[in-house]
Amino acid sequence: MIKLNMKKQILILAIGTALLSACGSSETKKEETTPAEQPTEQPADKVVVELSIDANDDMKYSTNVLEVPAGSHVKLTLNNIGKLPKESMGHNWTLLGQAADLVAYATASMKAVDNDYQAPELYSDPIVYTKMLGPGESQTIEFDAPTPGTYKYICTFPGHYASMQGELIVK
Ligand SMILES: [Cu+2]
Image (tube, rainbow, N blue to C red; front, side, top):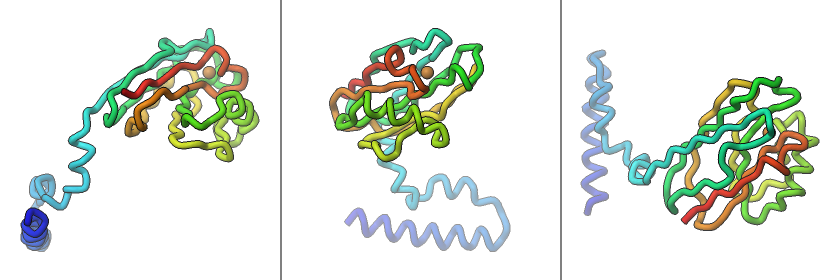
């Protein structure tokens, strides 16, 4: 029933939008309320969690434990607050899948200079990461919280994972 109604509404609005377009008037507002945007409704229903984590020249993250509620949508910002050049002290935030072998991943990614220090052959869901950031750089990445559990995160810059690792707890 609801689906049918939606379809009708979409059709009507689609016609309306087409007419508006033909007139050359602005239909921006109309589009925003179109039920055709229904697919994006689900993420909007999710709790959005914003996290911020710093990485510094001492090869440390500002926190080694992050927690997010199950089913949430995460916006994570990594800030490289260091001053040393990216070539010698770059940082990223790499979330590993539970099946991933942390040491194996870190070791393989160390050699993957051309792939921003990520080892695709060892990807294990989920794999989420920022790019390698130089001094003063920040990046925000978005992802859906993986299934409840504990996930390791590391910096894959050569030699960093030992002191730059932590846990993302989803519960
Ligand atoms: Cu690092």
